[in-house]
Image (cartoon, rainbow, N blue to C red; front, side, top):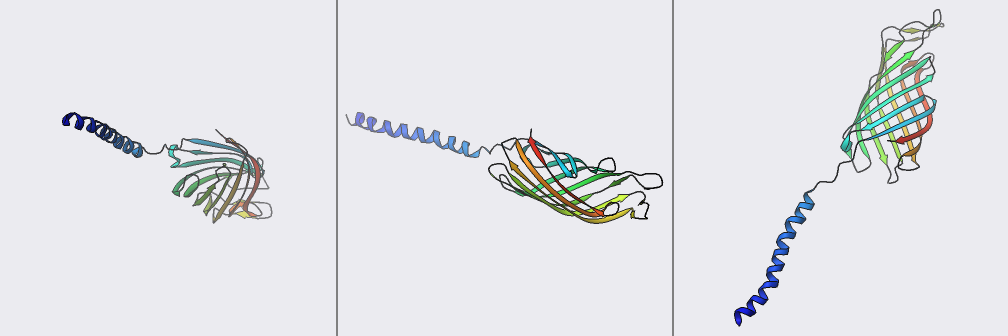
Length: 216
C-alpha cells in the first residue's frame, strides 16, 4: 500500500521534471537564434533643380555596406557629372548609423573653339563621414561632410582668362531629407556644396534640388 501511494505521488513530480528538462533546452535554443539580418534594398531617386538627375543607393544584406550611384547635370550638355561612392557604417542602431564614405566623381565640362579650351573631363575623389537618422515611419535625414579634390589633365580656360587649374582641393558638404509617404515612396529635398574648382567663373559647385524616392 505504501509503495502504491509513493508511486501515485512520484508520477506528477516525474512529469514536471520531464517538462522542465525539455523546456530548458528549447528556451535556450530560441534565445540562441540570432535576429534576422535586414534584406538588401535599393532606393532610386529622381530630382530636379540646380543639379538635376537620378541616383540609386543599394544596401547589401545586413546593411553592412551601401553603394551610392549618381548622374546629374547643372547645365545640360555643358557641365555634367556621375559619381560612385561606398559607405561603411561603423556605429549603428536598428534604423540609424554613423559611417565612413569614399567616393569619386567624373565631371564633364564642354569646350568650344575660341571660347573654352582645356580638359573636358576631371576626376573628383572625396572621403568623409556620414550621419543617417531614420524614424519609425521611414522618414530620414542624412548629412555628409568630408574633403575632396578635383584633378584634370589640362587647365580649363575661358575667354576672359578665367581658369580651372589642373588640381584643386576643398570641402564637400551634402544634406538630404526624405518625407516618407508609404513604405516605398517618399518626397526628398537635398542640398550640397563642393568648394574645389568645378565650375568656370564661380569655381565651387552648389546644388539644390527636390524630387521623389522609390524603394525597390
